[in-house]
Length: 272
Image (cartoon, rainbow, N blue to C red):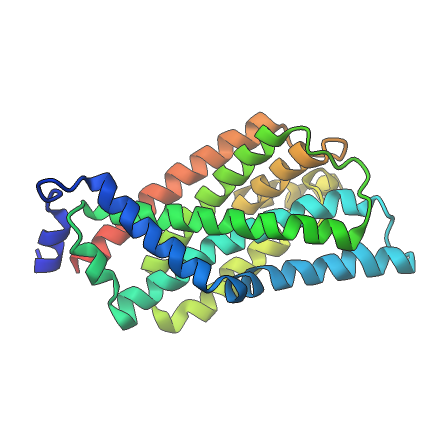
């Protein structure tokens, strides 16, 4: 075992709690993210906002889509914003830290278990995903105007979907960020993330795929489907959507699965 790994596995120093160190690492990441907030929001929200402008404003104005389409579009846009912000917030720094700057070694020397360092990165990604979604929601509503069936009456359900969705994709970001080499990071986004967006029921409801049953059931392997459908169930419950309990259950399973695999891969890289 390397010196770094030994230090990382060491218990917290006397008088210093593991959660205290965890909080210090998280506060550092929050300060860094706050300092780079404009660039972060531009990177994570520009594409969703452009989709809102085109599909939620221009096409309805031109009569190419029904005004009611915005009821299905808004939850999907929020889902893709939340998911992509969470995955980028973890995956990209992981790739850089392990391969280029080796900044991760400083964190591994902290007097807390290695797995807790990885969990802190996941929590940081969750927070950044939530911030991006909170930014896009009022912007999209302003651009699209009145949205039929939109309600904020189910705030607890919205928060549950957002929290679990951000956790699932932040955990996926940890897995990808520790498994993918720097030279393949662009390939990862083109072969994994891009198809995930277009087949994630973000711009159309899952029930709309009844016309293509093979695709309807194939897309169930896509974690983004459950975030988008959960957002529809809680924000625009009048639109066709998956049952919310099934969505929440799947998001819990995905968070646990991606988290376990991500922690295992992180530990492997840390020991290397």
